[in-house]
Image 1: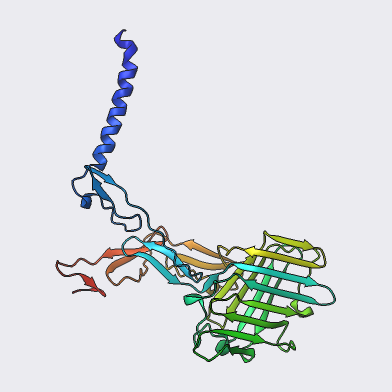
Image 2 (image 1 turned 135 degrees about the horizontal axis):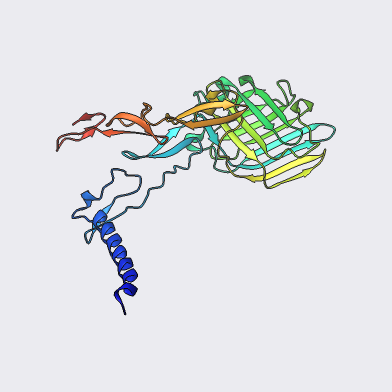
Length: 320
């Protein structure tokens, strides 16, 4: 066989060998310290047989619908309280006839732990009252806010026990909401009736958004019902097993859209929350006293670790 005929194979083999050598050289190591990339979010890199092996990424999920979960490259998982809680819904029913009726129920284990509106906080409806907003841009379209004044709220059991709240207005003095019960670690339930509900069912309203808001500065609990639904024109709409929405679209101001992330710019446009990523280099606070020079990078806040001379270590922002 002539050299000209084997040259392509030799060239190809040389390229493969060169690529393999380059990759091996890039990953070559003597100790695991040489493999570290400075981020705890993708796990610990280790050196095995002279080659860097990548770590396993960590999952940040505290199971709390009222926090925004993220990973800080230096400190690891962060769970930032947010003004909006994204809840899964069990069922919603709208009915039209001689009177209008509405009822909903959240999925189990949605409002519990840190997600529960604590007694004597901004989220306490006995102190600050509340409101309920139900809206849709589909079908006949409606957007209604129902006031839930503090005078009609009571604590379940003793104040301070954080067991739950009950709203009762059976005569409809304040509006169409007659009963709303919120219990720690139990489904929240609401019933309403009356023409002042202000919706019509001429065409399918799917999806329907629901937002329960406490006080002026309290949290909003948001659901979006759709998908698994049935509609009977002029009669009823029913939806089941709604997953938690990705955002709370029923906003009236930028305050409603606070996602708890200092590296986003929050705004409310036409009733829809927007959380745009802040420019890289924007000053922020990563809530870690042992970092400095915190800035935004790709929507996350991170700083440089404070360096301490061994055996000292950074504790609460100082070397000790």
